[in-house]
Image 1 (cartoon, one colour):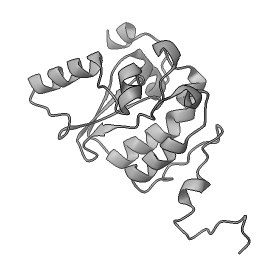
Image 2 (tube, helix red, strand yellow; image 1 turned 90 degrees about the horizontal axis):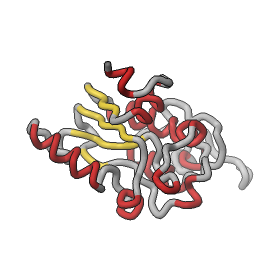
Image 3 (cartoon, rainbow, N blue to C red; image 1 turned 30 degrees about the vertical axis):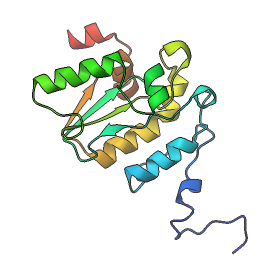
Length: 171
């Protein structure tokens, strides 16, 4: 086999096969584990957010949890620590979950619409959300939760594609 070819049957080339530098879609079933998805996320250059990140923020919690929580994107503390929901909103989320006897390490898997911090904590653009969408859909497929909780308007727009604000959607 030539040096510039990859084997269709080898798992060694699996990460290289998936696009990481453009908006080519990430096909369902691309990843066989959350670990392989995380490795690819750390190498991702699909949008401009990669240039300003300190860490890629993939997830935290139990990968087999019945509840999947999806947020907007990393803030400054999340970018510094490489984990979602560790800042003020994460502390509030942990308290809310604890109040209903849910533990973030046992009962939930937490991730975001985008894996890199937007500058100045701005809302991610549609293109930035689209660049991460394949990763997110793969996370949903691999975790296979019973419940998905979308936290905020950006998460609702990113997953459901709705243009309405959260108040209109919720009622």
